[in-house]
Length: 178
Image (cartoon, rainbow, N blue to C red; front, top):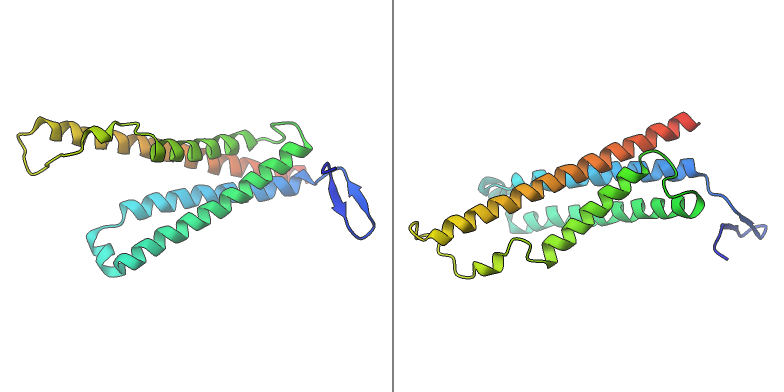
């Protein structure tokens, strides 16, 4: 049965995992994930023509590729910590764990919704010609883009705050438990 951690040397199984270690690892990974989300936002808004000319198209893709891989790795560590804690203790086993879980669900949930669902109805703007200022569809198109970007920023800020504050609470709780 997978209820404990196997000790291969003497064949025993431990029923407990030190949740202080799980809280520490999960807290650090949550803070790293929040930092990566912030770096991703800063990199996407800081990518000006001058920056793009300096690093080139290959550098542009490498920046975001590295951020994406690091985000996936940090997410895996956070999810692993949540699973370990969930298997060994009650659902909200330490202060901050709810914030980290909510931040993770909000981040990946919004990512899935915004990438796979046409939330803003952008498909209706199949032939927008921004060079024609008299076209009333252009104003609607630009306002829709602004609204979607503000919502993305708001969700990003909430995710970063949840992950970082939850991670800090996990680390503080872990220190006080020693």
